[in-house]
Image 1 (cartoon, rainbow, N blue to C red):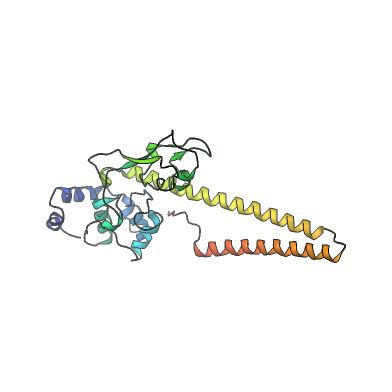
Image 2: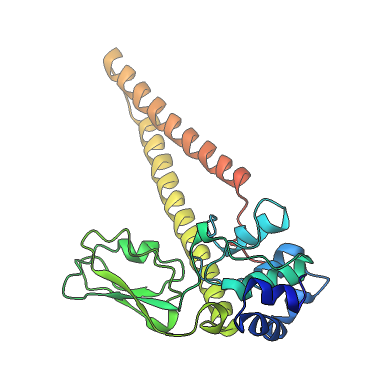
Length: 265
């Protein structure tokens, strides 16, 4: 880790002192030896789930850092202080934030122009922390206190009615975002993953039951002529093939990504 002189050389203003002072605010779990390295790194991330690091969420990014597949300076929401936090746990030097992933900015929240919103729900589907309330063909609104400022809802909007507004002018990175907010955002993200997985499993189960019932119906149907027998056989083969594809797809998904919902003890 760089000393104070090195930090001042990188950042001639007082940001070096701010970084060192704020390192005492990291979660206790981040320095607990019993936790895995990925767990400790994840505890230091702001949990905005913005994907700016190049990974689908904060947990995969933490795992990539721990495994040496990503650098620890790819998180714009955490800013330079975030880099310093990760560097301390990794025992590595503090390096500048990689500008390829974005710049350190004040915390922002999404704002929906309710007069223009058409209720398409695309922003709701994109929000990683369930911070948008609304229903199909109904006006949507952002719950400011829950918004992490990830801006993932902006691009999917087909009528460009979402904008990002700064709410912490003059404060950026961890100076604009608290550990309590990060912990709450992670909890909401994990709950969203659980909900989406549950919904998919329930839908898959409904489809499987429907296919099984249809197959039973086809098998029980009486066919007189050769043409009718051939038609029933064709229907049976189609249903069986669809059920097998669904089974294999589910098996491949489980093998490729075991359900974890980015949780850890």
